[in-house]
Length: 297
Image (cartoon, rainbow, N blue to C red; front, top):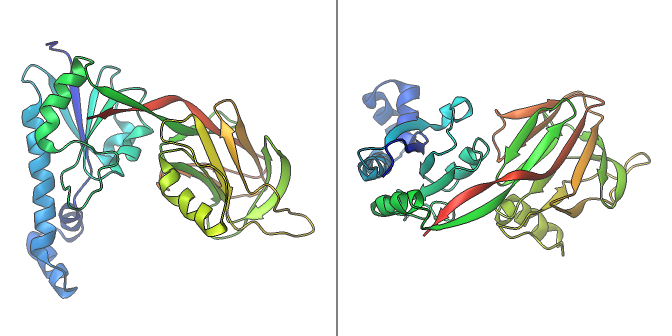
């Protein structure tokens, strides 16, 4: 086996670690949980399952390979190498957290707690990590290419997401903009809009589609097609509600001309990692060129 292959083991802090960071000592964490009638043993058990899973993944990496552990807060500034194999140890939501920072590196999702996490994106148990790593290195395993969505500002800034991108006002005020899509153009005032991939179609977009009784066909996870939904569009003498949903194929884009001084766009619910757009700026949303390469059992 090559000696230069690197494995990046990615995770995010457990509940216990987050509480410890906030309250400084285990004793204070226990006191905090007890005063809120929470089971300390349950929180610790979930923490220990995560630690055991990470340890098992670490032991699965061939001794001649390089390795590094990173936590979610480090994702934005971490320099991923082209030949990395990325192992995401945690709940399904960890994979979208990673996807926007990758450029084609294969991702092995490891589920540390099958009783709590569905495993839609983290499909391997910790004891199968070694086999997955070796098969990925040998290119002898299934890879599922999942489409990403990209938002691009007129100044060149870009943002990627695996599930969906939201565009709207920074606060709870109405978002005002001119929407331009393959079906036409319309000035709107709304609660913002989302543009979703097939991976994200089972979440926020599905809820919106079900609530409004939409007949629109949601994309599959590997399909290079997006669907958009405008949320709570407001009809007035100046704004319309005709273009509130639609599909975008791999060559099409949705464009918004902002009429907001405090507009934002963020992906996968991570507001801290966002684009800001002021009055008169344009943002385009479409299918990203690169994909998430998800290793499958």
